[in-house]
Image (cartoon, rainbow, N blue to C red):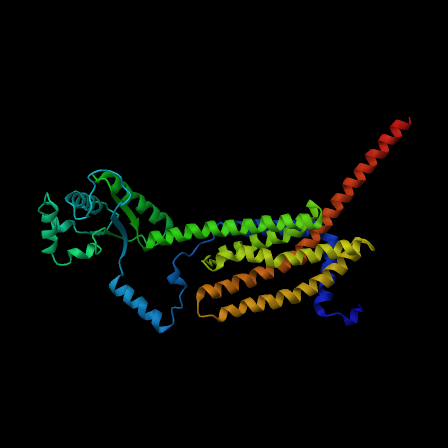
Length: 393
């Protein structure tokens, strides 16, 4: 194309290609340093397991819900659910949680939890039996019936009873895990009848569990997508090294995106946990176009000219494609839901990194790989020729 007919992006990319050809080793070094810095940012990533934090807080209905929650359930607590084990095959097990043996274990657990400095308060049916627990279930039922509100700790068929342990640990994963272990230790220390289970639950443990699952899903889905895509690239390119060169921008994209999120303090939520797999699927075509076009041009011209044509043409085309894709993702920021807004922002950021990795970084690695292959071939030819001269003598 005549230089006058070229758009500004193509002209700029031609200048970029000239710099890449002359200084590809230095550019690779800079890219490696940037990747190391952003790789550290991945260790700062935080995960958001509390879906209520992803609600639109400005809407009246959510503001009212927040006021109600702060007024009536403002305190933080863990719940110990005492329930009958229907699958227990032991003889003489309690068939009703109002069994004196169960009540005695709850009274003992209540005392242990109340003695823990890190637990601010405990609510259960234990205070109802300050004068002692009757030896028969009818006596227990009589006391509970005479105590207003006592039945609120049981479900309708008395198969589940709740104990509330009030804390101030928030939803910090380390603190919740530590508190859960402390309560579990107290549960194991009491005298429990057979056929009765004690399970710890509540908002904080649920959030911690969601975060644990979210971390696992993010890693598994990203790795699975990476392995499948890399395997297909090796098969399609019929070369391990060429398949890796195509895949390399995707590695950079993932590290740069997650590292940037870590530094910016943007938490990974249920919505954004899948961005790794999405970016791998969307960004792979950039590397394929760049590598395929370069080797196609190399069949009829020099590395410098091939690089200039590839970077200017493919770079300009993918720039338009990437810009429109990023714009579509940024449209998600118009959503009322913060999780959808964050999804759009992170995907737009990732697409930008895809283009930069494919257009700026990838050509330098293509040149490096080609020079490396040429050097190996030259060394092999030299060794072969040297052996041939030795045999001739």
